[in-house]
Image (tube, rainbow over all chains, first blue to last red; front, top):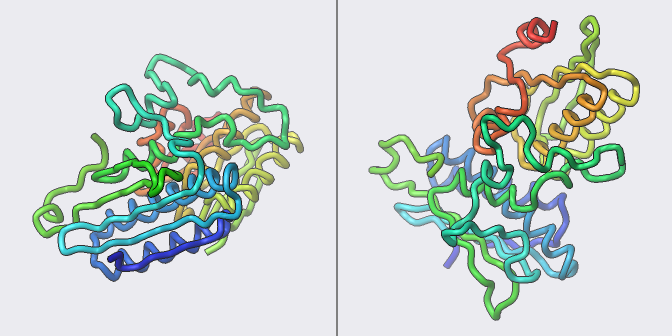
Length: 178
Length: 113
């Protein structure tokens, strides 16, 4: 059973609520400070993604967040109710693509491909020039273990993020990238 | 904690001091500020991120949007940031290659001369 469970309407303003709750629960679980920062950002990205997905396909449906604290791990799952696999960019190996691949940032390339997006339309979202998978790519760079799966009954996508918080892992510098 | 924004002029540069949380909810406010500055003819911006407590991918998108706008006028957008947790986000996304990042406003202004 999750330590804390949360369901919220698919509105951007509630992403902050989810972040505050995840921060409070991770603090109470005693996760190291560096991991707490990662949890804060990862849960924000996962929830912001779920809000976007729901607003496209199921605006009335809530976003579901579960926080699970065990002696060795801290896991957060974020589930949307949109089309399965929406805003998920899988890499060739079946895993998630990394941010640098997504942005195609080569040291010699002055401007990444999304750079040339027209920017004269001020009403357009500035983030529209960003590939939709960027939030997940950030998560991939932050979290020890990420698992993306089909939601229950084939509806939506579940993003499960796990941090190893056990004593042994805590002693070692934690992994920030793979 | 909400987003706070103050601007001041330093020679031909405009310094934007950002504090608080830049997330999906507050990022539009920063976007408005950057658009207003560029529309008003400020093409050389220094964004001081030292007071930023939280930054997500929406915030990154707004900063990239600002950079595109000033570049369209042959301007510049430099960041001031020494906070490891914020720098890490720029590194993971590869944006350290896109933004000049400085350790103080003075350094950013000097680099822009």
